Image (cartoon, rainbow, N blue to C red; front, side, top):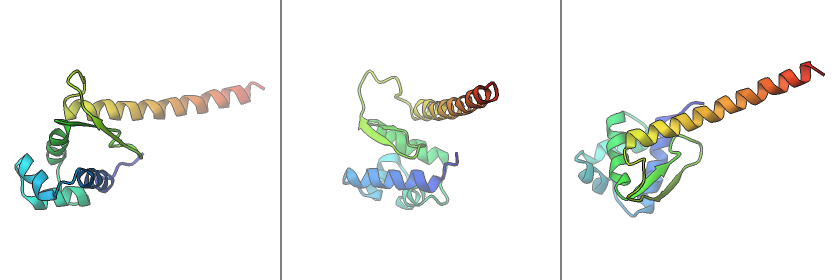
Length: 118
C-alpha cells in the first residue's frame, strides 16, 4: 500500500472546506503561514510536523479516522477518547491497516494450503 501526501492533503482540504474554514484560519490556529497549509493540502513541500499540528488542531473537536486509508471518517471527538494524540491516532491507524494486510496474506496462505492438500 502506498500512501501519498497529496491524498492526505486532499482529504484535509475537503474536511477544512466542510467546516467552512479558510487555509488562513487553520494556519493562524496552528501558528504557521497560510502557504504552509496550502502546500500540505496540495501534497508538496510540507512536513510530518505540520501534518501533526493540523491533525491536533482538528483533534480538539473532531477525530480523524482512517486518514491513511482509501476512505476516511471524521467524527466528533469525546472526552473519554483514548486516541487524543495525533501520534496515537496515526500509529493505531497504521497498525490496523497492517493488520488487514496480514489477514489478507494469511487467507492467501490458507487457500494455497487447502488447495495443495486436495
